[in-house]
Length: 279
Length: 273
Image (cartoon, rainbow over all chains, first blue to last red; front, side, top):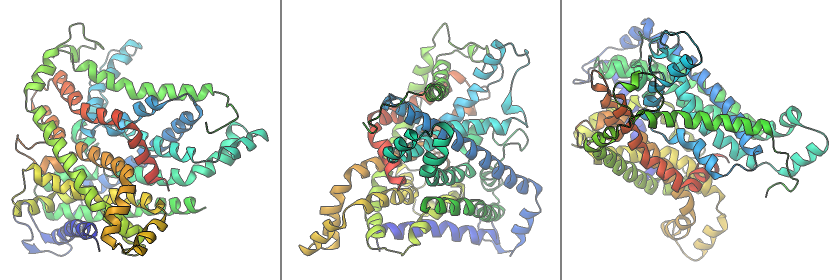
């Protein structure tokens, strides 16, 4: 067995055992594993409305952001494939958000949403909106969608590039035959293009969903989880509990429960991806 | 080239592409514009400054930021090279020798499902025991392992596409597994290894969460950590923050332009089987 496999087992297994041990013990950052407390941490966490709310918030956020990225990404990939003249410059420019550090992406959108002088505020004023400042990041209704917009901006290029690659592997003669038979537009897409890329789209949705469930950097930079708890995703909550309250036991219990939720959310999508790519 | 029948250029497609390009570039241009603004202008609703403050860039260049960019580059490239050294034999073993059966590939990817915050405390404890916390070396070693599953996953697709006859021929000629790997497999994989190396290096360069906890002293901070500290001031200077952001993005954007072909190839051919 290669050293790579051993290394990953050590890296994967060690944190897992650490978390399991901490979840069932009274643990602080300085003094882990003081006392075995059984299910006490898990019970505390499950009874905590803030924790349960963060689970629901994270799953809804991830679902919305993933669907938005995948729909936009497929549309842009189709446009990219149709625009025969688009060269490597266009493709490189479209990839830029993907390789921009998330901390910079967060900064960028924080500046755009900056009340009183940000790009959004200035544009709305120029468009004649009323003079009251627009401040999505300090509104409990709009803060999460605003973080989501930055997330979609950053990760849609991944969908574009993977779906575009799948489009290129299509046999062009099938498409030509279909269009000679009079299939155009929606019909051509539904009968020829979609079946060819459905497997890839489902796989990309899976990847996108996992990335969105883990969102942390954008929240950290843009809102610090606020206003109130409006943008406290589970990653951010675990960070707060573990490294601000130093309660490793409770943080580990949240982590374990979140692992269960991630698995439950991701498995159906993974099954769908597997079925579509073998169809 | 692909289609012999000249295709009608689609106005809708061109429009979509135009909007996508605009939506991509506009925020980046705005960041550049803010990086030249004075303190007052960032809250006054101007889109382009009339009096460019080049001192924003000067101040940022004179701060600890360039050092942090160097730290990031060292950890990103070092981590990437180590990842590849481990990933090539790993991917080969999984693809060719069915090491670990059908489940090993999936098992390797499973830690990727969880938020990396999960690993911070255990890793911090481990590095402290090894006296490697707060060192660029420690972070480099962590990066080497963190993206290993992704690298193995992408590489496996490339290894499977190599004709198995080559390895059989090497075996008939008496080459052992190690020899086959080094002299036959590795040279054939060079283009894909370069592509995956770039992707992994960019992932490392952009990583923030682990870096904040594993490199806390000023001389070991990476770029994302240094940038996040600009928010520490009571009234953050957005012009300087924007300048710092832009400066830190330059290496990745330069790499993307320079390695465009490899980058796209690595993302697409590795992932789409």
